[in-house]
Amino acid sequence: MRYVFYLIFGIFLIGLHTAVLADLPAIISFYDILIPFVVYFSLFRGLSAGLSVVLIIGFIIDMISGAPNGIYMATFMIVYLMFRNITAYFHAQETVLFTICTVVGIGIENLAFGMSSLILHTDVDISFTAFQIVIVQIIWAFLTGPLIYQLFTALFGSVDDMRSAQ
Image (cartoon, rainbow, N blue to C red):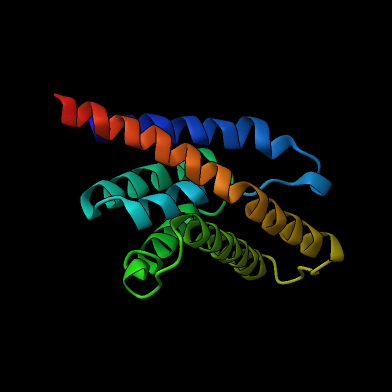
C-alpha cells in the first residue's frame, strides 16, 4: 500500500513539474521537483521502496517528456545510487544533508541534460542565460530544500504511522 501511495505522489509531482513549474519564466526557473523526491528516497527510504519507485517514476516522465529517451531514468538512478549510503559517511543534520544532496542532484541533472544536448546538437552555444538558469535553480534549492524535506517527512511519516497502526 505504501508503494501505491509513493507512486501516486510521484505522479502528482510529475504533473506539478510538467504543468505548473515548466511554464515559469527563465528568471524564476524552478528546478525539477522530482530530484528532491529521488534524494529523499535515496537517503531515508529502504532499497526496495526507493529503487522501484525511482525506476517507475523515471520511466513515466521519460515517456511523457520530450527529452531524449532514458535521460530522466538514468539521471534519477545516478542520483539515487550516488546518495544511497551517504549517511554512513556524513553525519550532518538531516535537513542540511537533504538540501546539499538536492543541490548536487540538480547539478547532475543539468549536467546530464547539457551533455545530451551537446551530443545531439554539436553547435550548442553555452550562453549566459543557461548559466543564469542553473544558478537560479540552485538558489531555489537552497531556499526550498528544508521546506520540502519537512513536507516529505511529515507526509511519508504519516503514511508510516498509518501502516504501523494497522
